Length: 191
Image (cartoon, rainbow, N blue to C red; front, side):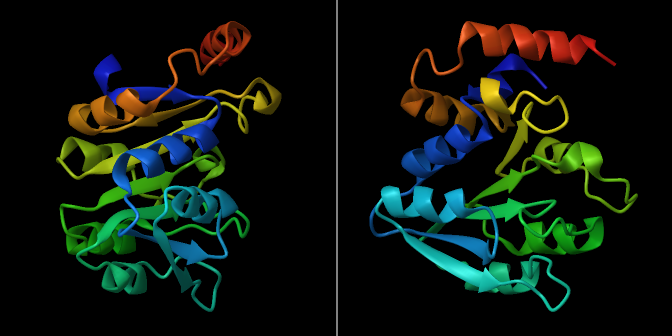
């Protein structure tokens, strides 16, 4: 990906907040699973929008088809944690692909992949491929989990240039400290 397709944050948590502030207005809604990462709901509420929470399936996974059906004209964001936090379950490629094709193009799909490095299932979706196909995705990653840098607070999002540019208008200019940046660079070199 190009540098223009990346936004950094004080953890991926901050990028969730930035996405909510960028794309949600008080009359809007955001769709998310329940239970899932609590910040999706709080960021939506702080933006003055309405969270639409869809219960997990019987096997504790996101019900992606029900989430797609919950999308309305005023829906601006769908939050997906894959793997889900707190259940650790994943949604596989076939269901993700069916979901993404069903969601209208005016909706930004925020795919939180904070734990993606731990997934060994071969059917786990490669979301970067969908981004390259032009879907309005913001893919969230973090150095907190796999690199053990949680206390240093550095995460990043990958998305279309135009969406990242909008988010950068909201982002604080010095939101990632120097020590976190240096630790992230070191982590990237450590194979």
